[in-house]
Image (cartoon, rainbow, N blue to C red; front, side, top):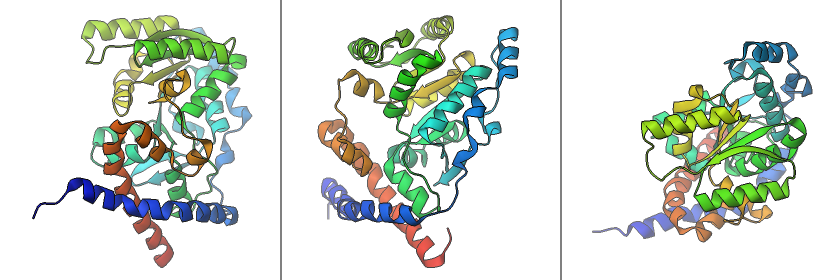
Length: 324
């Protein structure tokens, strides 16, 4: 007897539609009563004033490789992936520290799709665990709080953090380079950002072809980025391509903060509308994007049901046995 795959996928999605509303309200009530400490206070303003290392780096004219974990970053482990629990403000302070010391670092933003994909893509998992990986999906915040007993207030979303870096970076003197996206999207991104954030320092941008670059093209690109001396290299090639590209070239590049931001270019340029704020806060942004961008239907039908099943299983284990 043949099975209709679309029917099976739709049936598997049914629990998420039924559970999400009560899950959102229950999460809010649960978090109000949760008083456990996560150590989010470890990154204070004093972190960004490491003047001795900064002067040494400038005097040497070189890039220092200082592992980010020496800064005592609080973390949680969700299904074998390591996540930072820093707030957005603390993450910006960490970026300033990297820029001051001219250390080279990779930043990833992981959501449910990234997490589930990494269960089969071991290279992606290794990259995310080695990089500073932020919790980009609201369901992952729920998992960390409900299952692991964390006390995380909000996710650190890629497009939102990029906007803050562009905005607050004006006073900090941060320089930015954009890599990825179609030429028109990239041009609109540059013009929109300059209009929204007057004085922002965009030192370069490049729209690569939709194919593997030749060795000569990659050599030119790396030379161009290094010549522009950005503090931030924003890479919008789509996951997991952008994470793997950064990991492969990170130590050839001198940008202290190298970040894969996925659809942020399309959002900030105005080419793609973001979900309403209430949907983002309720963990339903994926649903809005799935309706707007039909190419994402397969992605979400493959990953969301599996995450929901694993989430429910782990949550019940904690409730029944008191530990995970």
